Amino acid sequence: MVDMDTLVSLAKRRGFIFQSSEIYGGLGSCWDYGPLGVELKRNIRNLWWRDVVHLRRDVVGLEASILMHPTVWRASGHVERFTDPMVDCRACKRRFRADKLDEDPWTHYCPARKENKFEVPAREPCKHCGALRTLCPECGKGELTEPRQFNLMLKTFLGPVEDEAAVTYLRPETAQGMFVNFDNVLQATRRKLPFGIAQTGRSFRNEITPGNFIFRTREFEQMELEFFVNPHETVDGQPADEYWHEVWIQQRFGWYQKYGIRTENLRLREHGKEELAHYAKRCVDVEYRFAIGWSELEGIANRTDYDLRRHAEVSGKSLTYFDDERRTHVVPYVIEPAAGVDRSLLAFLTDAHHTEEVRGEKRVVLRFHPEIAPIKIAVLPLLKKREDIVARAWTIRDDLARRWVTVYDDTAAIGRLYRRQDEIGTPYCVTVDVQTVGDAAKGEVGDGKVTIRERDSMEQIRVPIGELGSVFGTLLGGGAWSAVAAGYPAQAPPGS
Ligand code: ATP
Image (spheres, rainbow, N blue to C red):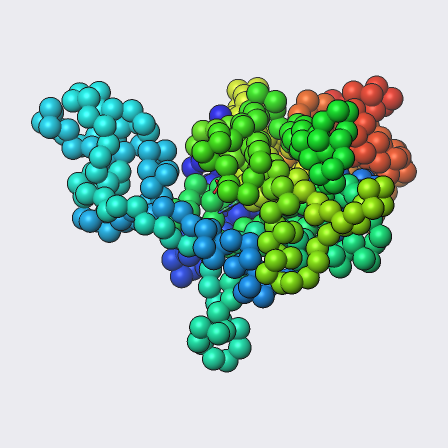
């Protein structure tokens, strides 16, 4: 498994992710997505949207504003309860989440040893004196204060006067946008239960201990679905909410597998009764084996009718659905798969990262699923001094770019260019060479064919330029390389 430092450095070097405001020393836990990161992020968001909204008959989309009426957050319970327990170190003044104190290695000054400063692995006692952590895990010296509740919502003021009346919040989740628009969407679309409203967008949390790269940040992007079901119905002998909860757990687990995350790095974790949010009937997390250990990638909760009921109570507006069959108004239950774009990106990046040896040389390759890969095709001229080769390569790139994200690169020799594309996960390279264009000076006519190289196997085939559209249509539409490659002559690798 690749470690976090390697990922952070690759992400910066190749233009996936940069520290925010780096020239001013950076802003803690804020990150900017570079040319490759923005494509990767967009792919994740678009694939989610395609699979959760477009391909389904029972889900519609929404884009609510980030700033909402402050009463939304009182009704939802966020003002009162969206808190984490925080403790301070009396010596070094650092702050920690009380419930996460023991998740990282801790600093210990061991009384049993002379050379006595140690880093002890998370949750383990000191192997010399047997002590468990009681003091500050960072400095190893300070006592910790009693936990106190810290609200995670970021406050701001709307309008020119900064007083209490102008206080509002940057949303800490996208979900409330769907609840407050439930009736609008129902009236506008005449949907029957069950149906869902989906949204992707930025959320903000003033996390006490952000960190681990983009795993926990204060500004992040969510992909959330609120799937409304009729609590009076049963499906396959089960209450509809329980049935649909199970369906969504399986769907969401399968979604990560579908886009290439290895099953052994994914697992489901059922929340214990004591950790369930006060409104939740059941919650299951999809967890990924991150470099920091198994952690939440997505939560799938049965939020019951809590949110719609609360907003109806506080707003005085009816947020019900008329059940024709039973001739009664019902408050739907809601199943919520809530995922993070950034955290998914970190999982896709971690899982794709491989280091291998090819002919005695180290090769770093991101084995992204083709639909996740930021760049699908790189067009490379074998000789950048030959104008005809360069011109043909550019024409091919411009042509392919109309359908797929395609780049042109001639800044190094072919072997180096291949390695660079491997390192950013580009599934296919197209190479234009002398054979393609011929040599006018010598009266030689080109064969109009190019080489396609596949990232993982490094195999190469020779394909007529006119067939590139259909070949990539197959390959990037889910077709297997082996099946396509079988139809074309293999090519001896120029620089493999
Ligand atoms: P955690 O326990 O890690 O704080 P959570 O249970 O509070 O997460 P949810 O409220 O269920 O998270 O949010 C849904 C998803 O949004 C999470 O699974 C995660 O992918 C993403 N997410 C939540 N908080 C953050 C954050 N601070 N930074 C990045 N992504 C986040």
